[in-house]
Length: 331
Image 1 (tube, rainbow, N blue to C red):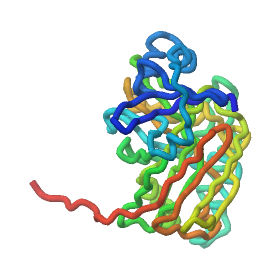
Image 2 (image 1 turned 60 degrees about the vertical axis):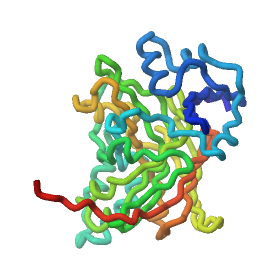
Image 3 (image 1 turned 180 degrees about the vertical axis):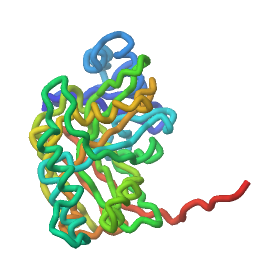
Image 4 (image 1 turned 135 degrees about the vertical axis):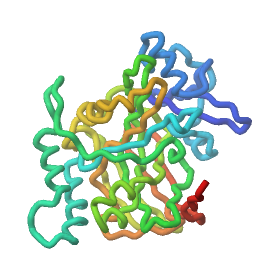
């Protein structure tokens, strides 16, 4: 595996470091404590993220699997101020992604006409991959929250007490940092579990916005450079150590109805998303859901997502919060 990746490490004494992984070699970097800080330096000095990382290579080798098992690996990106992180995504972006959504909504429709989901998907198929320099079809877009909802490898995905479901969504997430002049910079992509409430969404498509206001898990590895055109991975659910559901998922532009550039253009066309110093984690979508196969998840289930060229899987357990929504007081 030669694809270079960056990982964030937190030691037991609270020291933060960054790891550069290339091929079979992983080393700590010198003089930098976060991927965001490294990226800010790279932008400021007009260097690529990989070039700068290579110049800061240290001597100490790292066993990535051991550090993952010890709970020392953080999400691929974070920010010291979680309010400066935007979690968002686009749906109906993958070939086949409309089938489950359309089935979900057609069950409650009285006619055989195309649902809005199918119309949006077909518009993306027709105009989601424009020529370079052109703007293609606008995709479905949703907001998930800020950095408070960002969950790292091994951490629990906590579904709110009022939720009707907590289901996995295996996909890629684009990782972005806004430069001092307002320019969005893609740092790379990470493996992700977008995590949604599909029962709430199924009840009424207009509740999609509610169903997406949930945490999301981000893998430890930031894959540098343009992502591979064809990525094939596995999504599974384990219950008491046994696999209760498993399925291949496909991503990368060869398996998408939109280009990544088109999704980025329609996200960052909004000036509010170009505030200098902010971090954006944008989920590119998926066509693979256990919910579409009739699976009902339970607290304690473990979601596991893996895909080359990422070396490490993303594992998270489902939990349910005990608290209820905050009560509004009059001042």
